Image (cartoon, rainbow over all chains, first blue to last red; front, side, top):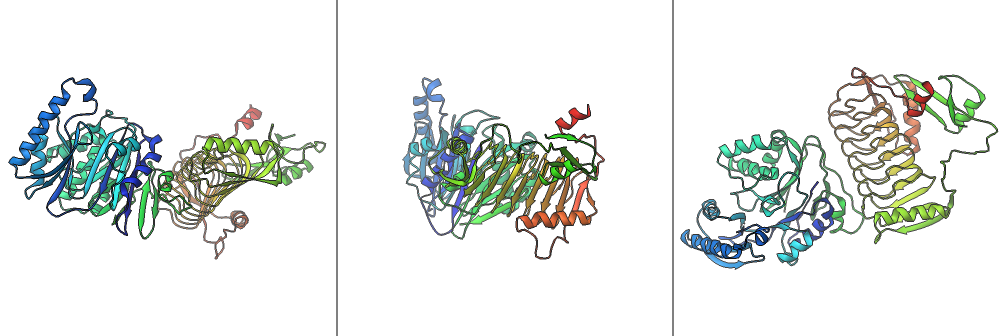
Length: 311
Length: 292
C-alpha cells in the first residue's frame, strides 16, 4: 500500500522536520516497514551534505564483525574523500551504519559519489547542498528521533512510509530514492511499476546504476536520466505518464521545487491542499490535518495530472 | 406485505399505495418498467422499516465530539444513541478519519460537521446524511437507501456498488465514480474523473460538469446524464436521446438539492449502454427467485 506525503512552504522556512514526521506518523498504517524523509534546508555555496550508509540495519545482528568492518569502510571513505580533494567539515553518525558528511568540494560530485560507492557495503543515499535524505526501518517517530529531525528547519520535503511488497525490508529498498547523480533530487512513490525490468534494462544500457530491486528506484533513475537530457521536472513528470506502465502516484522534490504525477488509471490516492503559502499532499487527508487541524478545502488530483510548485 | 407482483404497467389500488409509499422500483432494460409491490391494506405498518431497526425520534438530538475518538468508538456511539431513540445526531470534529458512520441500517438524520476520510458511510440503509466538508475515497460504498449530501469535494470510488438512495456531491469527485453501481442516484455538482460509471448495472448518474476519459466504460445498463463534456466515452457507452421524461426527472431531482443549473436542464445529454457487450440479467436475487 505505502503512504507518501509532501509539503512546500512558499513563505519561508518552517519546522519541516517536525511537520513531515507528523504527516508520516499519521500514515503509519499504510506502511510500517520503513520510513524515509527528503527534507530541504538552507544551503551554502560550495558546501554539500552527503548521506551514506556503510551497512544494512540487519547486518548489526547477523554479522559479528560488522562494527569493525564499518570502521574500516569509514576510514576508506575518509581516505577517498581526501584523495579527491574534498574537505570534510564535519561528520555525524546518527546510527552505527549511517553517516552524514558535510563537505566542501569543487570537483565533479558524480565522480565523488562513484568513488565512495566502490567501497564494499557503501551506498550514497543522497548528495546535495540543501537535501537531507534519511531512511531507516521503523515508523516516522522512531526514525525522526533516531536522526534528530524534529528540530530541522527548511522549506519543503517529501516522505514515505513503506509496506514492502516486491523487495526486502531494508534501507536499500526504502524510500526516498536519490536521483543519482543529481544533487538535491529525491523521489517517493506509491504503486507498482509493471514495466520495471524493461525500463531498468533501458536505463542500465544508458549507464545508470541501480542499488536495489525496488521498482520505485526506477522513477528516481528515470527522472535523473530525463534531467540529464535537459528536460525540466515538469517535462519529466509528464513523460513518465506514458512511458512508465503500472499504477503509481509519485512525488519528486528538487532544491526549489515539489512535483507530483499520477498515472492514467488514477489508481493510487493523493489528496491535495493548496494555499498561497503552503502546498501539502498526502495519500490521505489525515496527514494534511496534522499540519492544519481544522476544516480545509482539499481535492484529489485526476488521472494523468502533473503539478509542480516552486518554493 | 412487500411481496412484489405483476408485470409492469398494471394499475390497481395497491399499486397506487405502493407508489405513494415509494415502494416501487424500476427495471432498466432500455425502457423504463415500473414494478410495484403488493400492499396489504390491512397492514398496520405506516412506512418502511428494517427488521430490528431502532425507533428513533428526529426531534431528539445528540452530538458526538469525534476529536479524541477512534472511528470504531464513534460508530458504536451512533448505535447506542439510536438505541436510545435519538433521531438526529451531529458528529463534530470528524477530522477526516476513515470508516466513520458505517453500517447504519436505520432512519436517522446524521449531520457531519466537517470532513470524512476513506470508506465513510459504507453499507448504510436508510439515514439522511449531510456532510459540511468533503469525503475521501469510497464514500457510501454499497449504500442501499437514504440520502447523502456532501457540500465540498469527494474522492474516488464515490458510490461504488450502491443499490439505492441519493448520493449527492456539490463539488468535484475523483475517478471511478459509481463503479459497479446497481441502483439509486448519484449527482455530481462539478467534474468527475476517469472511468466514471465503470461497469454500471442500473440506476442513474447526473454529472453537472465534465467527466474524465472512458465515461460509462463497460456499462451494462443504467443512465448517465451529463451537462459538460466527457474526455471520452468508454467501451459500449453510447449517446442516447433525451426524452421529456428524462428532463422532468432531472429537473425534479436536481431541484431537491437546489442544484438546477441557471439555464435549466436543457443542456444535459444522456448516455446509455450500447449493449454490444451485453450478457447480463439485471434481476435482483429476490426477483430471480420469483421468476424461477
